Length: 319
Image (tube, rainbow, N blue to C red; front, side, top):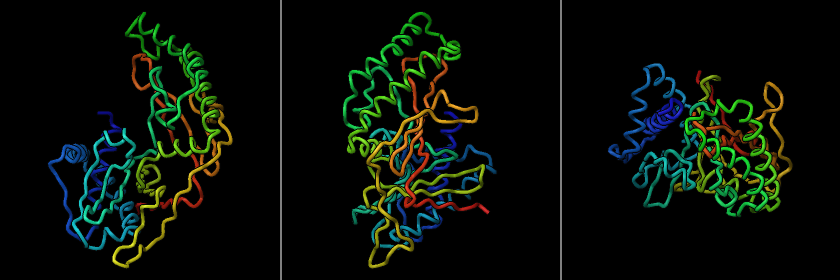
């Protein structure tokens, strides 16, 4: 397992441990579930210092979440906590931890991120219709025409030598793969995002099918960030007449795409990243190869670069 993935799973366990520590009511957890065993194993594989850092980061974030959710503090019906399987993310559920009271039809979720803000890692390939997958609208014929030379180049490269590495392509990786793909993708996104519903569907795809609290451990800055995504209005509910200590606003999605341009990095214009600016939101799409050997597929790291001012974003220093 890649180190980033391992640390991500370990942070899920740290957040679950923080919930168990702070919740003052009976909790039901299936510690024999494969997902639980995985995160516990990854946490235990860390050094003692790394474990302490993760627990500190998790506590700071979970304390914030509890202030917004009185049902975590008030004993009513049995409270179940569980770790989600990775397969849930593929079906639109980005939550890593789910807190649920089945008898009350109540639940909240937490997305746990260790040192990164990515919202999605999506693939492009000749077989993937990203418009259909992301926005429920098919890609145009023009997009397929514009990307065909890229896929043919990669296909031919693999057929000539299956052991070809991406690094072997040298400058051709950017000129014959990255640049034309980013241009075709940008043009297609401009076309599809002329429809407001497609924009909303794009953000539903990126942010998931459920509301959630995103807890992000920032080791460099030594703080924990909590972002609250209340797209469907299910968070922050009162219980037995007791209101939350803090109020959450409903998250408003964008309705207009203003621009898509190459992003700027320290060296100037980035050859691998584009930035899409919407009303009150912006996204970055960084294209990259996911493996050492050339394959007929690439990945996007999709990040939120800016969010509406009324989207709650709480930062808690560790010290």
